[in-house]
Length: 319
Image (cartoon, rainbow, N blue to C red):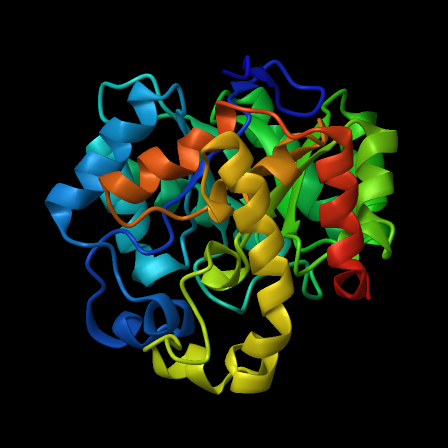
């Protein structure tokens, strides 16, 4: 089992894998039409959300990631309910909508605190850089840290230049940039070539990897005979028949490596990320079974030859 580590250069202790709670909570009104909700569906009911949380905690995984935008705030509310009175690290992201200025930050912070039912947010992340003034926003986030309302500051989907800008602004206030949450998996390796991974290593920033199983493609459950049911996923190029056919050698390799360790393809794909000390994957979990399976990635290690084989098998995904 992996030992917890610090998130970036902060004092916030986190496990080597987290849980993405994007699909948790019951969306109302137009929030039910959110693309992520339409693509992945919701969790498998309130009982299974609770089971996912319990299975994760039992495995030593106490980091849960959500966002104000997920399910119109329902994900934050549900996670807050489940986390009440528990030793849980909550990471969330703002804003709740697409129109946002740095001046709106205090309102967004208070709204997330209210939905989570907390006085402090462990990791507060800016979801998308957009056109906001990064120095103005980082200074407001630093104010929140000094006020005790935020423990650690993170960003999401930031480029190298944007991340360096945020890091430098926070450093002037004596506060580290804890993390940059970006898409990263064996089938989406752009952080290796766009400079984000190298910059995270240089600056001591944790790369939080979302969609670490490539939307289910690395689980091995999707084939040309078993394509995903959700409309949005079915129309994406990566889920079309020719793409699924091209993916089979990677799935076969994941399966072969997994068989050596008595683990699943998903666990091997997650382990590939975990063995980079800069990276922390946050796979989603709709139920207790998925949560327990994800946490199983902490219970074994890949050899250097296995890591090399996986790297070589997905080289085109770097570009």
